Picture 1 (cartoon, one colour):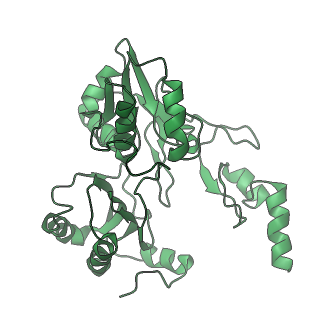
Picture 2 (cartoon, helix red, strand yellow):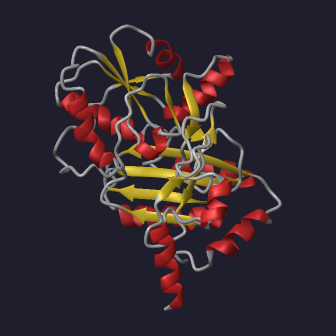
Picture 3 (tube, helix red, strand yellow):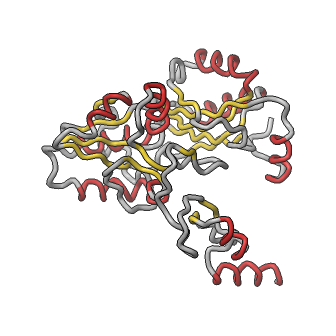
Length: 315
């Protein structure tokens, strides 16, 4: 058994494209004290590799955070395996909003210091004293109540393509930057209802505990995040209060929630919410760029990156 990928990304893409079956993309997380994250990771990797599961999974002493692509015909075996694991039994998971088998092309499982990097000591606050979970319909109704603030606990590149109406969207690149920024933004708003949301819930759980540690009592979190909200709102036939795209951390880079396009291509100014990575490997910055400008610039975010890349090729 190998715990790393030995095949090129190009070949992996071909392999997934040629598969004669459908896949299910889902995500889940659980904060739980895992005594030995390495052996826990190794055990999961072995069986999930056997089931031809692909994805990106982080394991730490504080729990597990997973995004996965599972062959439809192996889904029952995957569920049964979860139930047999004492750390994962009855863990709730969210299926992707858009049915797409191209979300992952390899199985990557890493042992991390934390499943959500917050830059804080382990004993900085009580991570179990979290805000109240709200189901999608309750969150949907509560957004418009007087004295309520909605706070996006995601990064700038996520909120720029999709967000809830009137949400506070901190302009940060990482979650660890966001915690002190949110605390500062809400410094004089302890009497307000604070509604937190993120992609699937993992960041909100930690952020709500952080706010409660600092004296905020009326803290709420969207259970299941944007993914679960979208499923439930659509089932009820309601108009989504989340507009645009939900950024996802896989090959798709986004799921369309509504037809609203909230951002623009910085090069030509046309409406665009398409994310790409700069073609210069040392940079690899995530940028918004339309297809025409990507073709014209050859995928580079700047003339500097274009020059650096071609200089390296010449050497």
